[in-house]
Length: 577
Image 1 (cartoon, helix red, strand yellow):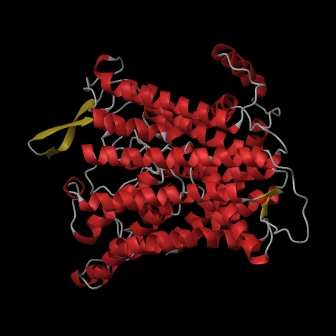
Image 2 (image 1 turned 90 degrees about the vertical axis):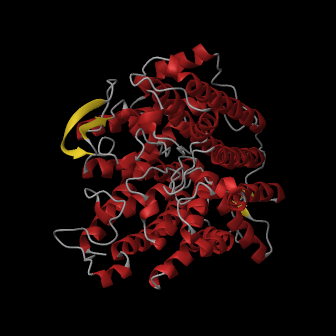
């Protein structure tokens, strides 16, 4: 790794951490119903929305009511996106006259966007009309992100309330997350991106004359559309679904190094800031900093594995006299599948950031990475999307690991474990275990099924270890609500649309319900005073314990599968097989 790459990485991480406190403090005020600089502007609109919807903002919900409201709302969102795709040929804002989407692809896409996964088995610019992109996919980008944030806030209330039967109001949490946080940030980012050259228009695709012949013609169709508004929320909401097929590698979706930096920063911005929000709301900011420290340590460590893996390139090229050394004239290393305007460092950094979060957007093709370079993003997803993770869901996933960590430490000293003043008992451990075990079950079970049946194997472009990695990556992505892919898998088939669709559904909502159950259980308990036997959960020791718990689960669960894919492929590369 050269000094230029090192400085870019450090600038990115430093900027992210510097923004965490001010944004996190603002979000804490939003959820605690304290005045903010946007209150006078947005409060009348918020009140109007409640009146229009018949919502009593003062009414509290038990965790079961909260869960039912959440599930019904997301079910309606799924149905709306599904129907829009089946009827888009007859709807407005379709200048390319795109046909209706097939039922299996529509099912997969509706599930994908409702679950904040944004897995895309289709090419956006040639499949979805502007109407479907705006009123279906972009709307779900907002509300699926707000759903995750609402669940996190409900869990926080479980910790701070005592002897209570309620954990808040889902409709209020959803509205405030969208109105006060996601929409203002998206508006600002979209304006910046338009200034950098990201397209935002309702005009049809343009046919242009090229300088050189393309086959037997000198014409090329340039797809355009209302991209900037969707790109902004897809990054900020850790959704990831691109307007264009090649996502943020497309020059009209991510045209400059500055747009690349802003989009990449947006991926981890809200997940990082929510750690500080967590600390403020539980009354001890050290708790939030401890979790953020654990996330950052893992993230930075893996960045410094990923970048050298890509910068080192393929050692077999040396015998072919191919120069892979970085210089003023070339980026060097493994530039296959990467954009020249971003180079090695920004491509590898994005790959780590997008899979540390449950974002899934890409500015390079992960299928073309080196074996180790492809394994790091895959493993980050397999850790459960808790290294920053999605907005809301990443942090509540990490809190589940924190509950397991304090439980293990409690067993060591023979005391009932406590976390943030609440006893962690059998019910909480059972629910936490479900949230940790469901994603691996979806990933490994789905992968096993795909490699056993002809429909699963027929979509694989490559044979051997890399072909297995393509399947494992797809299930890791769907089973952890990420959405990125190894491009060598042709996933827009009935088999994969169905398999990945159910993996996304189970991994989203079978985690949300247990988390809400924990929130309800904790809210009903009294606060336990800190004693000499209480494990401090804001110290470096606990940070190490938390990291160890996350990595141990990830290692024990997925190392055998990884050994069959990227590890074998790396050994084959070293031996020129």
